[in-house]
Amino acid sequence: METPPRCKFAFIFSIFISIFLGLVSFSLCIASEIKRNKKEDLRWNGKLCYLPSSQAFGLGIASLISFILAQIIGNSILFKNSYSRRKINAQYKLPFIARLLILISWLSFGVTIILLIAATSMSKTQPYGAGWLNGECYLVKGGTYTGSAILILVTLASVTASTFSTIKTNKADQDRKIHAQMG
Image (cartoon, rainbow, N blue to C red; front, top):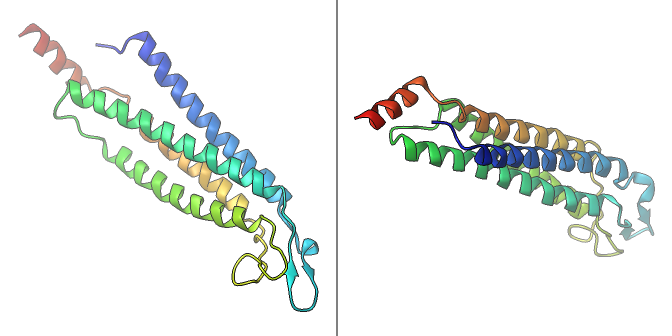
């Protein structure tokens, strides 16, 4: 028994939304890398430092929001699909590859969130005497946003692949459904 066309449309649309949001987040990370503060932006008066806000702050926040939404939507699709398969076949288990990909996606999601939060908060204004941490100014290291962008792609690919790995119906599942309807 196939899923109705309306459900297929919603499923495919949700996957595209998740991928789109992930790619938006990726693009915003690349833009943040370009717009982050450089060493020339740091001002030093002998004792205290000052670092102006950069455009990377706003871009980083937008990247965080779109990345979190992409992860939520992607996992919602995955678990909704798994739950509906479990309702049809009580012995259905999430395939090993799907579980492995989910683990990879959540690990890379966690690391990416930590990197983005730290880098984005460093991109905010660091006034004289306040700095980012203990009154000292910190610059976002080159490649931090790029590394986050790569991890976003890893997370996006993992969630999408795990979702697609749960779509396939086993021949045995279909045979059980046919026999159950006849008997």
